[in-house]
Length: 120
Image (tube, rainbow, N blue to C red; front, side):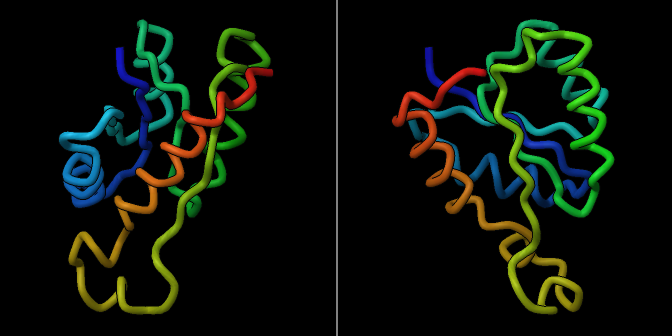
């Protein structure tokens, strides 16, 4: 069974980019728009070891931490903030590649999964 990552992001273009970047790789990726959807997914049997979230939404990190306190099974999930590429380009052009670098997420996920990341 392949390792899986979950991305929490409200922009549908990010979902397209993430799915494109992970297609045909040893990792699978799912994308949801809200923390509630992410928690439902994980608690419903989702295997995501890594959860990337929109770093412009700090309430996701706080909410995830509260959920971990209530459900220790979530402690084995690594939560990582992602943010748009540097510069103002993403504000002027809504191209997917300007919003998020799916290849960079794939590289990070591969490194973490291959390193036998610890579970806390």
